Image 1 (cartoon, rainbow, N blue to C red):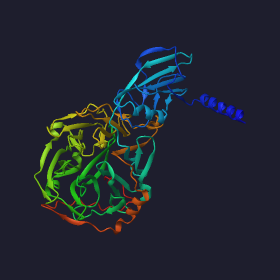
Image 2: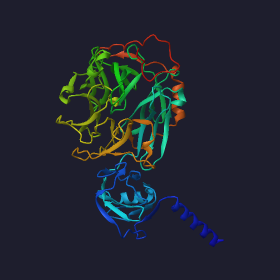
Image 3: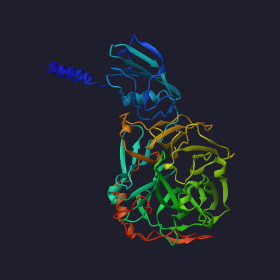
Image 4: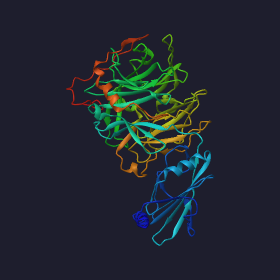
Length: 526
């Protein structure tokens, strides 16, 4: 019986090798390529995991060798411990997760090497130049949350997901199929923790709740007042966890026939307000609700003394390509509810573009923001770049990691050593999550894309990623809890009316068109 089982096991192993499955082993001499030709260039691999810095807790960087061959051999090693050998008849390299974790954990602050060999149809091996990366000692927050949406005019398939960055497990937070295919968007967290979380919902059937999560409980907040229609956009938690700044935007979609980006967005009106959690009030001031300006993308300073935001002149829609945002700030005292004087931190003229999406590093030393040619909605710009400002000196620079394509939706890790952002650099159309290491001096290193088990995963994915946010632990709230809060939103009482120095202006009333079957992602243009 034992002999029969041994024979069957041998047949299975041989069959696996014949159909091209990989053979992996520790670097203990079981595999050796003794005769080969060396070439003075690295092998072409996809994704581009070369000459970069990676976290010690990242999932294996599986890749595809884009060199013609019949057999492939990869040796992955560092200064300490056993390396990993992979022999395969396919160019797809899948790295075993356990030896990968061991290798990275004992080699922090050291180099990681990939030796790649390719055999041709005459059994001649070629060894390519060694690929070198660096393993950082600073880890990455374990989870990445993002919205995934299939590209279309209407939202049919949209959800908030979270990915375990130490492996390839993706889990659902909330999908729009659970509430009539409405919109779920703009999730945010306090200090990279899911204990205090926000999500915004827009649904024809269920309304426009702001989903507020605290201590394991979800509340659907009705932010509708005389001057806020309730459609909350972008939000930022105050460090004291008791104040939320949010924008109210009225976007419409434009389409181009001859452009690298066929879609564009115009903001018909935008204002800012604060939601006070203890008193359940919405307050504002004239400095952030000017009738001649659009105000959006709020971001609290790390000491909580200032509200930073982006502001542009309110222009008619035919001048959409002239919209350029300045970076502004206004002081606010949470105890007295007193506002200070409006200040310009950085003007659009100084960067020759439109400033959006300001995000502070956890220690407050740096402000990461976006600059595009125009618009207060840069994700549909053919090119937008990442900039970094030193908050103490005001010095700012375009980051060299910016690509010729659109780079947006950036966020910081809780330790301030990593940034996550969206980029269309792979193909120019689909946004994918990338990570970059930031050292103590503010130097930002070459980005790498979110690793997937199948390295060709992004080639066939027609969904895009929005707002990658790093969090330390998993969102534990079940999707059903979020859905239940949405279903009960119509019974939620509205918050108190806006108070403050100048209550602001109401947004333009919606056009008197017949209500669609479901709320559209964008106001339809005539």
